[in-house]
Length: 236
Image 1 (cartoon, rainbow, N blue to C red):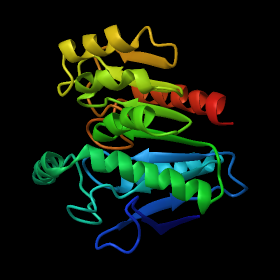
Image 2: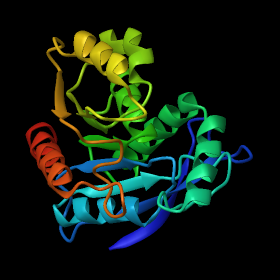
Image 3: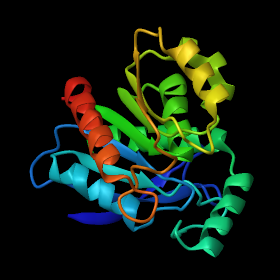
Image 4: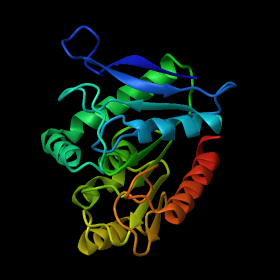
């Protein structure tokens, strides 16, 4: 069963623009845990909703918060349509990820207080991969996974705060996260006892999208199987 819910920001429900919608997919039975699916720069589009639906089929409560709501609520864009891709880049340039991680924290609070599910993980893509890393360093989320997260190499000074398990999927031919950035991530996070890194040789940014030109089916299936096992180990 899928629906939308409204979640108050950390600032509270009585301020202008101080609430956002989230797509929710519920499992048929009581959820074994919850997973926050963190969007790419294309909003809560059909691919992100499909990922939520998949997690619900596996027995998790899955939520995708509308993190661009301060710019424009309800954005849904197709990365394979060039004008929409360029529109998404514009939103990315306006977006403040510090707000985003606070909104993820508000979503964690909603899950625990309103949905009454204690164990919470997150999985993010692109911008969402960066936010998954930030959730691991700035919130008490139980487990985090990032796919081709951008600009993580610029935030490695926060790695000391990683207290719960974190997994990062790194395509080696990512044209948004180059070899120097990948090396910095490996050098800093590779030895970290709570971090797991997986490289995907020759794959590019967006390889695990649900549909479209960017998807690499074999690589996506491998990464997703690792993510499923990771959450089964750390959330269930």
